[in-house]
Length: 74
View 1 (cartoon, rainbow, N blue to C red):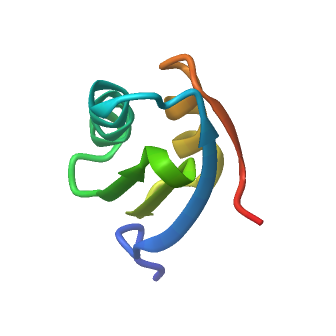
View 2 (view 1 turned 180 degrees about the vertical axis):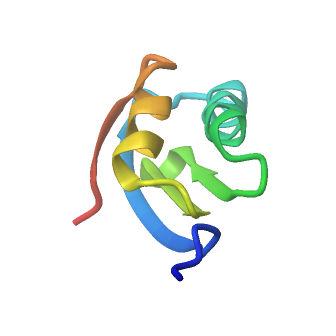
């Protein structure tokens, strides 16, 4: 039996975050998908780090739905 609550850390390059409100919007988008997620958004480095049990693609889609461009971190 596999655990569906195992967290994985995902790092995304997210462009378009220009202010604190943008960072909050990204965090809220991820938290709406996974309220237990740990999210760090850093607009100065265009980076979002998410620790979540949700699939990477779902997390990226939630951020993109807020209007930001999402790519894998280098």
